[in-house]
Structures are given as C-alpha cells and as structure tokens.
Amino acid sequence: MTSPASPAPSGHSISLPRLVAFALPGLPIGALAAALSVYLPKYYASHLGLSLAAVGIAFMAVRLGDMLFDPFIGVLMDRTRTALGRYRVWLLCGAPLLTLPVYMLFLAPAGVPLVYLIGWLFVYYIGTSVIALSHASWASVIASKYHDRSRVFGAIQIVSTVAATAVLFVPALVGSKNPETDVQDMGWFIVIITPLGILLASLFTPERIIEQHSTEKATLRDYWEMVSWPEMRRIVAGAFCLTLGPGWMSAMYLFYFQDSRGFDFRTSTYLLALYIAAGVLGAAGLSWLATRLGKHRTLLIASTGYSLGLMILNFLPKGSLIPAAIIMFSLGFLAAGFVLLGRSMCADAGDAIRLAKGKHQQGLLYAMMTSVEKIASALSIGLTFTILSFVGYNAKEGAHNTPAAIHNLELVYLLGPIFFVMLGGACYIGYKLDHKRHAEIRAALDERDAQASQGLVLDRLPLTSETPAALPEAT
Image (cartoon, rainbow, N blue to C red; front, top):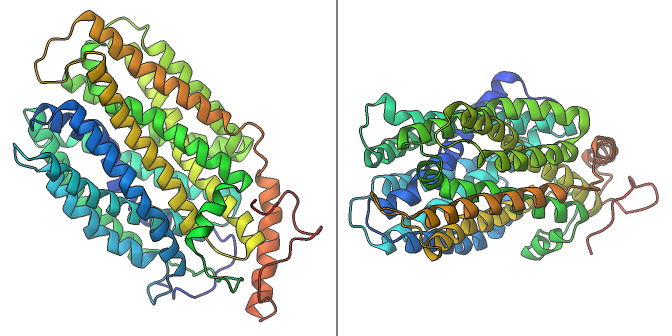
C-alpha cells in the first residue's frame, strides 16, 4: 500500500488488478440496489403485516431525512487527512454502518412495528452514504483523465451489476422455497460481501491526497454554491430524473410483472436478473461509446432508447416470455449508463471547480449527487405505493385486483418512468464539458499542482483570459 501522500503522475491509469479490487465496494451497493428497492418494501407490506402506504411513507421519510447528513459527511471527508488517506478511512468505517442494519432489516421477525423499519432504515442509509460518497470521491482521485474516469466508473458499475444479478440467484442456489426466505437469504449474502469488498479495496488501492490550493476551508455554504455551477446544475437535475424513473419501476416491478404481465414470482425474478445482468455489457458498451461520442451524448442516446423500450413493453402479449426477455435485456443495457456516466461527469465538473476555486471538493459534490438521488429514490417508493393505494390496487398476498385496478397499475408503472427518463436525458442537451475542454482544465491543474509542489502557488488560480474557456464562477 502506498503512502497516502505519495505523489502519482496526474492521469496515471490504475492497473487492471487494482481496478478490480478498487471496484469491489460496489458489491454490496449493487446487491442492495436490487434486493432492497425491489424486494424489501414488498416483503414488509406483504409478509410482515405493515400497510402498503405505511411502508411507502417510511421509505420516503427516512430517505428525505437522511439526505440532510450527506453535505456534513462530504465536508468532513474533504477535510480528512490521516495516515490511511482521505477516503480510505471513511470507506472502512462504512462497513459496520452498513452490515448491521442490513442484518436487522432483511432478517426482521414477523410483527415488527413501523418504528423498527424506520429506525434501521435510517442507520442503513447513513451507512450507504458513507460508502458511496467515499468510494466515488476516491475514484475521482485515482482517475483524473476524462476517458479514464469512464473506465473506472464503468468497472464499479460492472461489479455492482454482477452483485445485483448474483443476489437474485442466491435463494435458488440455497434451495429457498418461498419469498420470505428468499429475502432472508439475500440479506445473508449482502452481510458477507460488504466487509469483504471494502477490505480488499482498502488493502490493494493506493490513495493520493489532493492538496488544497486555497487557504479557505470548505463549508456547508459551498454545498449550496455548487448547485449554481453550470455543469453541476445539469448533472444534479439529470441524476434526480434518471434515478426517479428506474426507481419508480423497481418499486412496482413485482406487482406489474405478476398482475399485468402474467408471470409468476420466480419468472419475474429471472427477468429482473436478466435486466440487471445486461448492465455488465451495458457498462462496458456505454463506457466505450462515451469515449467516441462523449458522455453527455451517450446519456441522451441511452435515455431515449430506454423510454422507447418501456413503451413497447406494455404492448407485448401477456405471458410472452421471449419478447419480454429481449426488452428487459435492452432496458438493463441502457440503464447501466445512467449512474456511471453521471458519476464520471461529476468528477469532470469537480476539476473545473477546483481550477476556479482552488478547493478539492469531490466529497461535497458527490454528497450533492447522493442527496438528490436519495430524494428521487424516496419519492419512487413513497409516491408509487401511495398512488397504488389511492387507485385501488391491493398489494396483500393472495389479494384479488379488478381489471380496472390492474389497468391503473399499468398506467402508474409506465408513465412516470417514461416521463422522468426522457427529462433526465434532456438535461444534457447543450452540455459543454466534453473531453477537449476537460483536457484543457487538466493541463492547467497539472501545471498548478507542479508549481504548488515547489511552493509557488498559495491560493487559487486567478480567473483570467488565459484560464480555459467557459469556466465561470458559480453565481
């Protein structure tokens, strides 16, 4: 393990073995993206006796409350300097903060009160914040070039996708016979891989601390200032929409595929696994396409294709497995780009901000990203479950729903995701921070870092006519 403060050439690409090791904290995040958002709400509503509306409101309220902690965590991360590095120490602390609540949520006894769900969800979301923020911020440091970041975030997405697919097959591998034990088996899988993935990444990945070139300390005021930064406005709005759209689908997936499409629980799970597994190819394919067309253009293509695929899905014959599998694979392939390209562009915007302000604030920027994603995912469960209850859909195990209720289920399932995914793609129309502009920014940063190492730079680089074009101060 290299010294945290040891210099590394700017833009130096991480080797493949270290890249794989570094991506391993994506294992629990990916597995939870599938298990928690799709299965856990239904598990509490159908098997543990809580009402559909109560479960939806619990998930929404906790996520909205938890997001207030993200800027504090981001600021603390950016101020951290230890013998273990800046972000590594936070990643290690995140392991127990995630493992314990996962155990309590997925192996909860029957008859737990609503306060049990709310309390452990709150601890869970704190843990995911610490891991997601530290991991993404660290990724922006080990890869500083425009296209290298697509590679690093693509690797994280691939690892996450593999875990999300694997967790769905765990019940079948251990011989589970019913949905209740399915959820518990998924929980055990996540409890095991969380500390393992984080430990391996921490042991085998070097961390270089990026020095500040401003004497000003980062404050929470910077969090709000970043919202007005031109690129970050688009990235934040896009992240909100491209999280809410697929999250909306995830919350209702089992209801829709069983009651509308006519598939049983196991077949629905396998179709979901195909959707998630397609993300491995999608992450690799869209990362490659981004190196040819640019990240923002690739996102426009992915969001448009995703929405068209959803439109086709509802016109397929009921119970038609092969066409449904083709559509689900296509949707999963395209959805893989939403997170990895957004994260990569956030790192690029962080370089532009560091050049203008002299502050390394990646933790704060990713806190902004996770905050809006938490709002979106909170709304995806809270809104959909509340709307389903309002339109007369009954989620209880074995309940009979009328054709009108199922028709309403279909409308709610499709219209929300199509609207938000298209809106998320539209956020990048006219986006300016492409690879050429980013190369200019990195060249200026590298020059300033070299001067700083010789004690020539004491504060931020003045914004002059020689600063790379289109780098306005936040207003």
